[in-house]
Length: 425
Image 1 (cartoon, helix red, strand yellow):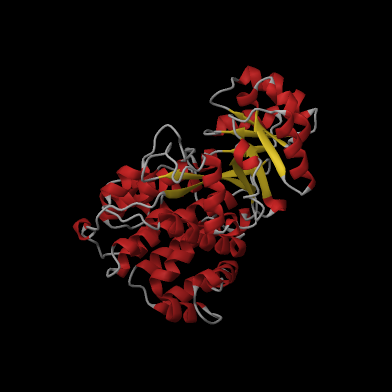
Image 2 (tube, one colour):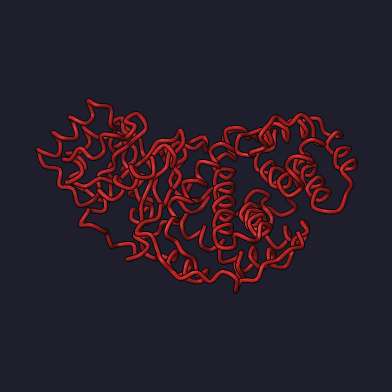
């Protein structure tokens, strides 16, 4: 990549949509994706502000309806927060009941009327979750009508988890550990007996001294260097033919609907001709996260996160600089590379030294600076969904971006990533 873009070319006035979407993964004990907790943030007024007099819970349901819930979650289970008003309404009747968990928020008083309503909805297929830390003594009243108990690691000390978790498991409830941010926290909760884990611990880099790339990853990296350089097509094809599995997996990926080739691609030569080198490069980047030797449960959440982040950054770049096609390609690459320190268990500094990148990409990955660094910061802020600090608005402001349809771009990225992962794992 040699083309660059000037940051001063994005100069749209700031005009924000009322809501953008936060989506945090929930993984099972095998590290496979189980579901997502969905939250909508008010980007124009701040995280605590809600429009049109709707409660926070009603806003989540309303916007999930507008965007189309299946587009946001694929085949996963959706955890949606509901309060007393929503619980007694019929506004979530459209939701896919078999894939929806209604999470009772802290403000709900478990009265007889609430318990009766939850029992009624359970007969229609809805499942419920509640927080152990939120309800205290009230949790005992909710237990007969809930399926999942959530425990916030930031609020409950380990000693409490050790005593509470076995008792709750004895009642047949599924336990969800919330805000799991480190690998040590994950392992502790796994040992305690939690069923599900919510947080971005799986995306945190763990540096392993002397770690080397697997043979298949090394083969992909070699091919990436050939594709990004001025190597002849014949040389690229020869490199692919040295590894039959690599060639087959690459052809499978470039034939996914997400590739948009228009017709079936039968050979690497045809892929180069129809897709071009930049497009082929992106599928090689994706392959690094889905190598045959480890394909399956372990890396699918990381693959999902990387492809979603990369696609969102690409769509944002297209919106900001529609006349500069190469900028979107570079944004996609930054998104994919931003998790390679986690993937390879080596520092990002080592990665940018081993993979030839332009200075803008290097600065984005190492210090989150420049146009691509700002895009990356925005994508990461959206993922975090942290109530305590809303960084999305400042990031949008730094980009001088019109965020009027940010949520729609997010959902488009979710859909695209879902298609890719279906073919890649």
